[in-house]
Structure formats: C-alpha cells, structure tokens
Image 1 (tube, rainbow, N blue to C red):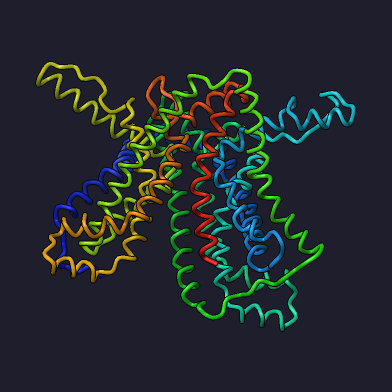
Image 2: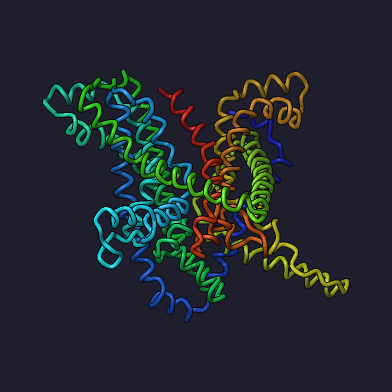
Length: 542
C-alpha cells in the first residue's frame, strides 16, 4: 500500500486533467442529447428505435446464447479431458480472436455468394442452375448470429476455461461418486460454479457485438449502431444520432455492471477454490476423436476457413495486379496512426495509474477505463461534438481578436483519430500497468526514498524500468486494436485518408471483395500477435 507521504500533487493534477479529456466525448454527448429537440426524440421513439432495437435484441440474444454454448463447451473439453490433440486445441481455440467481426462477415459473404465457390460447387454437383438451387442466405440476422458467435466465443472460452481449471477436484469426485455421468457433472456442477466467468465473457461478447458496424452492415442487419451511423452520415442529423447513442449507452451501462459483478464473484470463487485442482480424465479411441473434432469445429469456422480464403484471394490479386499504391498508402497510414496512438495511450495510462499509486485513489483510473466499453460510433459522435465546439471557439477568437481565419484545427485531422483511439483503448493501458504495479511492493518506494530519490526519481528510476514488460504487452495489444478499429475510424478519418480497415470496408461496399482480400489478410496477420501472447499466458497458467 503506497504511503501517504508519497502524494505527488503535480502528477495527481495531470491525472485528473487526462481523465477529464477521456470523459469529454461522453459528457458532450449527454449534454447535446439533453438539449435536443423533443419532437426529434418522439420521431426516433416511434419510427427509428423500435425496429432497430428488435433486430439488435435478437442479435444480442442469439450471439449471447451461442457463444455460451461454444465457449463453455470448448473450455470443458480442453480442461476436463486428456486426449491426443488437446494441447493443440488449448491454444488453437483462441485463433478466431485474430479475425475482426467485419472480416469474418466479409469473407463468408464472398465464400457463400451465389457465384462463390461453395454454391457453385453444389450446383455443379447436383446439376442445377441458379434458379433451381436454394441456399440459406448468410445476409440475415441468423447469419449474423452464426458468424459473430464463431468469432467472439473466445471471450467466453478464456474466462470459463480459467474457472474450470480452478475448480476443486473434490467437487467433481463427489459428483461422480453419486453416479452422475460426465455430461451431468458438466451441467449440474461445473456450469453453475462457472456462472460468474460466463457472465464476464458473455458481457464482453455483447459489448463487441453492439460496437460492430462493418459486419452488421455487410449482412444487412439494422442495429442501433448502424442507425447512429446512417442518421449522422446519410441524414446529416447529429442531434438525432446523439440521442440514439444515449439510448445505446443505457444498454452498455447494464452490460458493464454485469461484467463488473461477474468479475467480483469470479475473484471470490477463485479465492475460495485453492484446494486440489480438477484432474483431466484420460480418454482414447472414438471418444477422443469425437472430442477433438468438436473442439476443431469452432476453430475451422472462426479462423481456418476465412484465413485460407483470404490467403487464396490475396495470392490471386497479387499475381494479377500486384500490391497497389492505394493499399501501400493505407498500410502506411494505419501503421503511423496506430504507432502514435499507442505511444500516447501508454503514456496517459502510465501517468493515471502512477497517480493512483502515489495518491491511493483509483477513481481516475476506473473512470478513464470506461471508454473501452463504449462503442466506437458513440465515442466518435461525442468527440465530434466536443471538438466541433472547441474548433468554433478557437476560430471565433482568432477571427474577432486577430482577424485571422483558422478554419478547423481539430476536426477532419489525424488528431481526432488519435484522440478517439486513446480514449477507446485507454483501459488496456491502465489494466496492464495496474497489473505491473501490483508486482511492485511499496517497500521499494520506501527504500528509494531513504536513498534520496524524490517522487520523480522513484517514478522514472524505479517504477518505469520494472513496468517495461507490462508496458510492452499493453503496447502490442493497443497497436493491434488501433489497426483493427473500424467504426470510429470510418466516421472521423480525414478526407481522402484510408486505413486498412476503411479500405476493406470501401471494397466490400463496392462489392469488389477480391480487392479487399489483401487488406483483410494484413489485419488478420497483425491480429495474431495478441493471440500468440494469450496462448503463451494460457500455457503458463496450467
């Protein structure tokens, strides 16, 4: 516990200012929505929100249920049973995390297109033409539920796997001695004990689902997020978009509460189960093969099929036209923005967490971390409102005081994108650095103080070197998330500026899927970095 004598007032003040800047988009959004026209709100309540709320609710419910089934089932397979191939599945089940939701939708739309490889193969095999052959339409709510579930289930898999590994062997042995079969042990003992972990994973899945804009648009699903985008872009009605965003914030607030309560119960369950851990039951023969195939299905649908398709299409595109200048420029833009945003996000997180270390208050870090739960579309609108007001204030000042026309200094620039990335992913920086600080005992602070180090010296000569592993891992995760971020980038990017994500979105919108394959493949390859880190951590946790 940090000593009060180490209170660092300049750092505390800086932390407060940074927290205020992180909250500025949400504050501006709430203020604008409260000042909005009541007639507009009545129109939204009557005509816009009900149909989109129904489709959003169906999507969230379907994705939630299916990810629970896939995630908990996969976690039970790799923790409760010992069979050949289990070690492979243990980390391979994380691979779909490398595929953003909009890329899996993009890939399967191309694969399952009426003139795509799957339908063409079926028609040729059955000797039918296009009018005679019926195939399920992937561009539907049910298609969205299916695809999003197979790419988001690792959130549930990770949390429930950790809980299953912590379960006491005595509980399982007692259940088996009472005559319960393996599936009954899973349903009556393991699942109820894993409810907090399931709640945590599912709430994260639902947050990712409601944040999505690319996959839902590609699949023709009218969600609240897509309504915000269309209301703003197509109708130029920022006030209505802000009011829909406030409605979304209510849903997000509920999910955050569920996630926090689940984590609190999960910590209690973990601390309560320190006895002998559950051993894996050896299985062989056909049963082992069945378990391996069941575990391989999510990996195949969520990663292997779309990744293989992107590899083939990228190879064809490069053979035909090479690596285009537009894609090269989009790659440079993506790397530049992600690098700058990562540096700033890490620096801000370091200052906020360090202030909490010295002042013994975690309010700033908790408040600043909320941006990760807020959809990028909502943050983009809030940032547009706040920076727009600031731009006008600065322009008016220079116009009236100095007679100089400044134009827009913030909106429509890369600064806006870097700002929204920092707010969106600040929670990753704070969480990782907090974990690093938890390993630095307060005795080191006292020792450094006794050796004549002031507060600044303790911060940079003691804390910072010890935090380097946590900072590096956080930087990798933030960099990858910045590269993958689509909703906020799509809404706030400067004119004539494309990133890999927006380039892919543009190609998919035009229907030229083969031209977007290289951008999609590059994003997936970079997305493998955090998956590799998670796989190593998963291996060490056994």
